[in-house]
Length: 123
Image: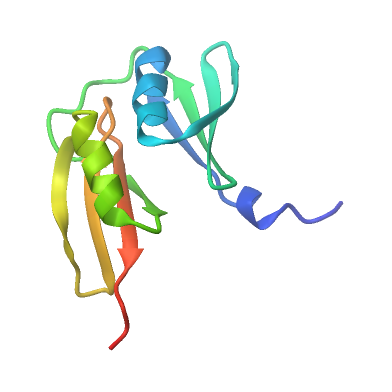
């Protein structure tokens, strides 16, 4: 048995109530649809995959995130503008962080957090 590619060693699977709605949201942010099979979809971001699995009985989340995943981008300011243009719910506004990133967190329609970040210059 051969080892999996590094981008396949750890993959996040997000449960969503409405796959069509979630696909619209993620694609508007720049994720690419790799494939869809019934109530399951595979999305891609720069060679890394994210799974969406429709679970219609998933309870609604009133506030905050269930969890979040960080997506490193070359221009976090451009991603911030894109997220705002699609009407994403902002959990944490864009700012420089003490851990060396400029980032922000938004929520998908079911409360899963997406944290987009760019490394701050090392001084």
